[in-house]
Amino acid sequence: MDTLIQQIINGLVLGSIYALVALGYTMVYGILGLINFAHGEVVMVGALTALSIVKALAGTGLPGPVIVLFGLMGAVPVCMALGFVIERVAYRPLRNAPRLAPLITAIGVSIVLQQLMMLGWGSTYLSFPPLLSTAPHSLMGASINDLQIAIIAVAALTMGGLVLLVQRTRIGRAMRATAENPSIASLMGVNVNRIISFTFVIGSALGALAGVMVSANYSIAHYSMGFMLGLKAFTAAVLGGIGNLAGAMLGGILLGLIESLGSGYIGDLTGGVLGSNYRDVFAFLVLILVLVLRPSGLMGERVSERA
Amino acid sequence: MSDVLLAASGIGKRFGGVQALQNVSLTIRRGEIYGLIGPNGAGKTTFFNVLTGLYAADAGEVILDGTRLNIGVPHEVTQQGIARTFQNIRLFGNMTALENVMVGRHLRSRAGVIGAVLRTAATRAEEAAITDRAHRLLQYVGVESRANDLARNLSYGEQRRLEIARALATEPRLLALDEPAAGMNATETAGLRLLIESIRADGVTLLLIEHDVKLVMGLCDRVAVLEYGEKIAEDVPEVVQRDPKVIEAYLGGAID
Image (cartoon, rainbow over all chains, first blue to last red; front, side, top):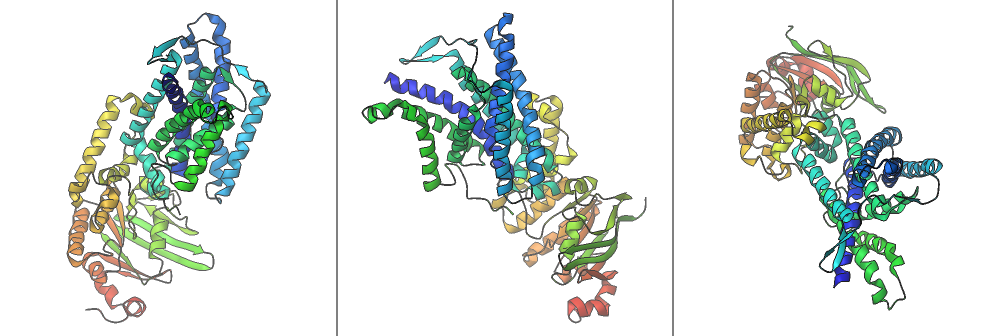
């Protein structure tokens, strides 16, 4: 029983992170119909930026959470700027090109970012200083630490804020209008290019937040960490129904739970033949099943006709 | 202030080998209802698309109220004061009727991200003003009762009216309606006619593309006729109706 609770807690933490990253994929897809494969790398850049700031401040005697907050405050604007530049340089010139062109460009951007960060930060695994309290609280026989509570709470608050932004504000309305039909939105006076930039910037800010969470929670950061994380978050977005905000959140949480429960029980279920190192299998099994059984995802609507 | 609101001169547009518009010039006077008619494929909608910035013209220019329109950049054209509806209704189907109109207020409002996040007093006041204005526009066109329904669930006639409300929300000086009566029954068309007249009475100049010749002749102050991308007539309806070129090209005989 306590294993179950523990795996659920772990799943929620992981799922919150997936959800934040998945939102970046789904928002861009919703507006441009583009899968921004470089998004995982934005998350990585956020993690490494925060790591450097945190390391620089680690000896100053500031309280741990304050240092991590500074790291976050550095990573978020860096990633926002990066998201803006990626769209401007790599995707905007290809706005009217065949869909394959921006997709391949996205993969190219992803490789460029990985290599650039490797040049700057090296190819070894970097450890995130243990600044945050990891003293466990017990919860129904399982344990949860302050950092995990903070991750779940911050992710929930951020996602709530995003929903309000999209549903209740002027710029959110313009985003939804652009997602439905960019040319009509522009005829109604919406500056579509600005909305697209804004979408990339917001998605990248969420990615930076997720990057800091991942590296703090697993105490590690690495130039290629964005690849697998990005792929999983993309899976979460597809699971929820890509293009759908609520779907990305649901998909992220579900995927986190599936992965966590799966890797927690796979040993018992297979009599020890397969271990928890098979955890990645679950995410991609989910991706395959969704693509086969329900390609539009859990909350996805029919594929919209896009001229 | 001159009485000419819009002057298009020498507009040309080519699609591959097809000359869709050739040297089209016309002037729309302040406060009038101006009709644009012509057989199918004559270039009416192409002209609309050039005028509202959807296509860049190959030749010519459009002057609105003394300012050259930046044609080819739709949101700037809207900013300068032209709004339109579409022959095939193009609403934001997954947004409510009210939200559709509120999108039309986008460029007449300013709230940015900072204000939205901090919920500043100015942002909240602006949002309330947008909502209020949108409700009044829905009332004006007569679909207020459907304010909170998704646009795609409105009836055909309601959708046409909603499109007009959304266009009016941008505070246009020129409202361009692309076949507003298409698919409407006689009662709906009569209602539309009243709506168009009241929009004019409120000081908005209208440009109308319409197939319903009776509606155009009865409603418009002046009418231009396009054929094969060229203007073949421009005058008051009574004169245009008797123009032999027009009768031959478009009406196919006398009209009653």
